[in-house]
Amino acid sequence: MSRLWILFILCSLPYGFTVRKNCHSLWKQLESCISGKGIEVKSTQSRSIAFSATRTTDITLSSLQTLVFDKVYLNEGGGYNAHTGLFTAPVNGMYYFAVSFLAVRGTTHLMLLKNNHEVSRGYGNSHDETGSIVSTVLLKRGDIVRIAEMTGRGRDRTRGDGWSSFTGFKFN
Image 1: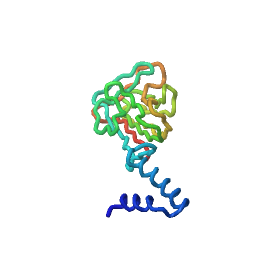
Image 2 (image 1 turned 120 degrees about the vertical axis):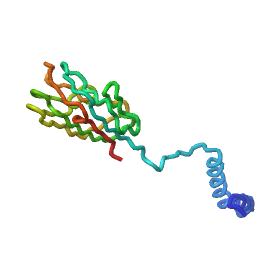
Image 3 (image 1 turned 180 degrees about the vertical axis):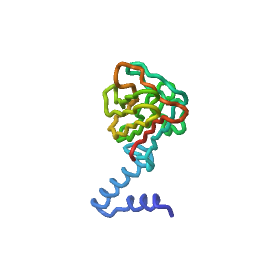
Image 4 (image 1 turned 180 degrees about the horizontal axis):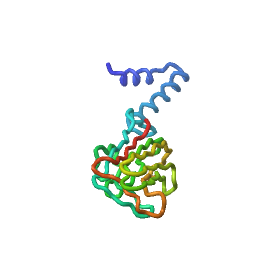
């Protein structure tokens, strides 16, 4: 016999006020469960958010220009846009970002921005010297993270062909 029928039979029997009151409470919970009202469903899996992209061609950045990493290898959660170079946080949480870039003929100054406010910076000098940026950032859904030229004077040159990359993920 199913548990539902056992509960129905027990609650129908005249065992006194206390038993009927407890059965009534159980019955209301059961009705709520069957109807789906008043029940909060939580996902047992956390949503994975991660991306990894590289730059395919060399670029000379103008003043405060966003560096677009146009070849996407991973974009779990859909937060990174390869056309704009912007990462938009799909959900609230703590995120980790890493940028590696190769300077070409001179210096390259880059910064990681959250909603157009500088979070951290990186520097590469001379011929083919690597610069990097690593940062952990607390984001709210809709916050935007991007990598941009830092100095405000432009002419910073960054190597493409996979030598410069941008990676990020949400801690679970």
